[in-house]
Length: 146
Length: 146
Length: 81
Length: 81
Image (cartoon, rainbow over all chains, first blue to last red; front, top):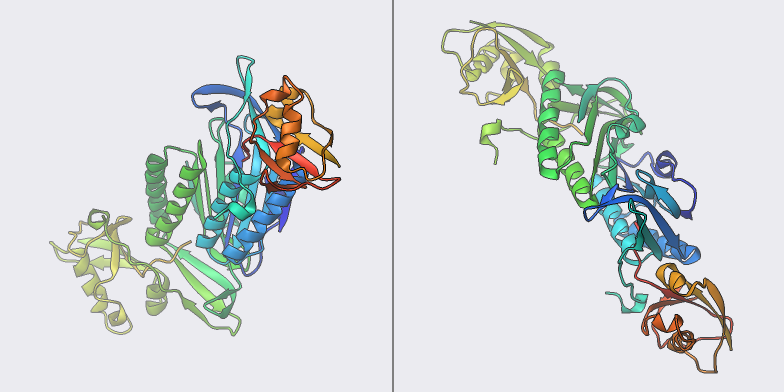
């Protein structure tokens, strides 16, 4: 299991290389990338802010829970911070396991949890020079979650 | 859109490089790999046989249908043939699109369809020197499908 | 008419043959071609009497009429991925 | 007691401040810390009165008691991925 929150560009092959095992029949690599538009508005670049130490804690907790659910510890998640241009990778998730169903389910679940509770914020910068923090999710303390 | 059925080793980065677009916020790469066991039996290697020309036709049809369903033409599928050692990639599927949900759904659907109707056969070779063709799916003519 | 047949995987192992020509009467269907191959005696008779077939690289029903020059493939259950 | 506060994203933009120290009375909770920050007047008073908070890097309720040396972060709605 590997997690990171980093201002350095994400190299997909490196995240991918964190997973895989002779017992695994399925490997999945997901990349979230910066789109050139959002809600019909042209986007110039994104800026990600993070509470890094807490984000690492939350990522570790998410990956540990995904590992229990999916029955595999071959999981890697990296979130980028700082300023990203169009096409750059903001999030990379790699999972490998014996069968494809659990690999897909784990990767999807991880992505939803990252969006739901990892303390990261996204500011969109538009081609007209303006920018704004995007609306997000309101996490609850662990003891109040389902 | 790109499809291939090839005896050459699949290079994941090359399949991945077939997809992606400034309009895309999600990129998914799935790899099917040769496991060292199946149904509790240790596996030494796999051999894939294919009706290559027909397999290419079916892959093209699957990818075209996935493109319509998912609203993206950034899709690549490559199936390996011949003898594969443990850990080698038998199937690579890459999809990119605006949003993650359609990217995941398209990749999963493509994999199920590949297994259901692409004329490829898999022979497992066990560590005891024996081997056998694996049971598979019985495809129906297109006009009789749902 | 003359058609070409193809065998794959376990069917190829069974017969030791990958492909060949087949002379069929006018009006022959895919099923006629399968019956003609099975009529060659052992080991051909061990081919299933209603296998999955493809005609010219498309899955077809056994009542699909054949034409001169067609390619008919007998396909064991597929197991890609 | 003395605690440390952290602000992120829009809250940081609002106040122009990333972090700082805060002197609180005994028995203070996370909510006490938020109220103390909002009591600094504009622009601090524009911070929400019930923001999401984390104490020592874990999400916490506003009635969470604080201890000397704790780190309390005020977190705008998160938007990672």
